[in-house]
Image (cartoon, rainbow, N blue to C red):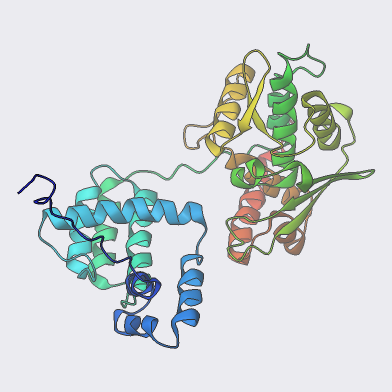
Length: 355
């Protein structure tokens, strides 16, 4: 026989049907015992349910959860332990091992990711299970790491930071000064989260005679994506006016579409959208240039601008509903924490001293 006649022809594998793919996906997003419905009359409706289930959290949150979940699964496989469903004792052991490298927030994020994937797969998840909660309390007591809140950056600190930004710099190398001025004032006066700040596109910013109108398309407290409007009044002084700073930046950078806040090279060239970490680096650089001092019990963070706005608003008599609406806070408990912080400053007896 010739070489050609002895060649085995392997038939191609049949393409995976849409229903079969849906069965596999539904087993992750819905109770496994219902996955067989994907091959019946409910296939279309079930496909939509799976799609909605996968959109129950933001893409960023899901990516964070996915990384922590994969690490947990890999650890369980290395220990020959079940991961889905995971017995509380296994989860507690994993938290105990990760506590060597993770602090309070990191461990809680891990726990949230494990709970998310259990609920998504149709398994009962009790977040306050005694085995897990007791171990968590023991870990946190053992770590004895003091919580360092973000230092509130109010108007005096913002003006100090702005002092490092030239108001009329030579272009194009001075673009970063104009960008940072607009960024700091918009973040502070808008009470914005850094994720909301960097997500702004040119179409989301409207210039009005009395100030800025920002369209926040989605945020941490808006998982349904309803969006919100944030109004920032025109400043009384040109050097600290958010509207004038935004106008100067957009005009100098010739931004007519796309991201508002972008990376700027040393030579003044514009690059892609600024990230949350980019905002943190800008704040750190400006704080170093300004010689801004932060108490050892606090930390420098972009969240400090949001905290500073809320605290200062309360100090000047703002009402709960005004603060909640502007900062887009869903819980009155969150708002009250800032109000208590403002009251602590306002009620200090040292304000009565003739100093």
